[in-house]
Length: 539
Image (tube, rainbow, N blue to C red; front, side):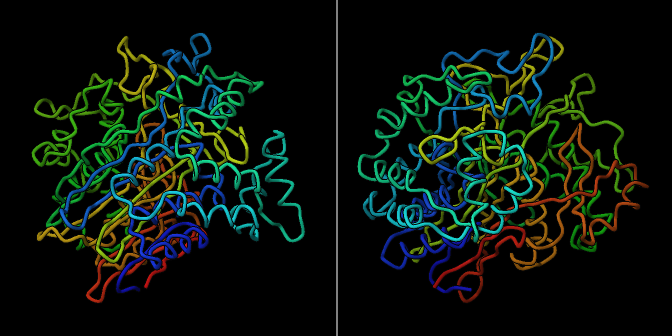
């Protein structure tokens, strides 16, 4: 609980870095730089300067919400069949650790642009907490220890074995990265040019191109020409609330709004939280949303994405009417806003995605808000380490097979194109336009389901943000996936009833990374996912 300001993130060191900036007179955007740079060191498998992200910013004075897009882009030499082996899709396990998976990192450039517009403290000052942490070292975070212990492949590549495994084997395990401290010092003093035009960028290009397994075609020209984008968020209504989230190339905002819009005709408040009936409705709406996601969402510079029609109330009411409250649909296809609500001839191929990423939220004393999701894609990214940080494998978010039934898909690889994302930073406002909730998660394409679960918990089941985050996870990611229930929780006990309703069900570990902030009468309440190492902290 806090009266004036709050930070929630997946690691206490990162949270404390942000809170320190706010206590010293910085604002939410200043704190965002400090939090993200600290996460580069303390949460390296999930996020860092070798990746990208989306930052949702709400200006307290004007009420305006802006989306800053720091998504990675494909190199200029990229071809549509990048991840095809003749007529077969490359296995994900082969694509991820290859140089082909590395996109041009966007995080540093995006954060710098956003800070130039809204920050108040000097750029270099905001790197000091992260530099100190990396230089002096910390006790290795518990979750990082679990990740290293569970992933034998880290021992097969020298980059990850020399850094992660070696330090994990120390007694006690300790994380220290003086090389990263020096790199952050360069970016602090010289700005983005140190990364995109200097020797750091040269190291990125050399490492990605030199990967022994399918090296990259990335060049220094690709880095020099990278440009973050400023976009309008996608917004829509759910009951009495207005929600704004990430617009394309992220599918997160559209998919979350679609799922909620289809659920609006059902009285979720009358259903028991986590009951089979509630899980079924959310799963069916999710299946429909994921079908539309494949059909329409891609980089808006390459694809005409009908964002507002896809979240319009008439379209979602018609799509939602397809849901039988007692039985799972046999098949799910996309619809067409303004046209047929169920396009039976349109295929929905199976797609596989990885599960990395980190999310944090900040509210400052003036009421400015940052909700930011950042990522290097898979846990440990491409497994290529450059001067203390990991490079992303975000290009595996493209659809590997560029054509289905002879038609180019919306998310096919192309030069300079941003791959579709599932990142879902979200801001919820009441009927008076006052912010009531800020939310987001990690988890690849599962992000969408995690965020919907928490939103329904707060908005329909009157949970606190912490209760909504902590409740068992359940979600559906569309064709090729089963309805997933979190093992060892009450949600798993619904498996039998859901199978009887026609669902294929998997009971598995669902390690979300939900973090949120909720308005209270006294100020703010923060929520941190108990499945992570994070906290909520403020004054």
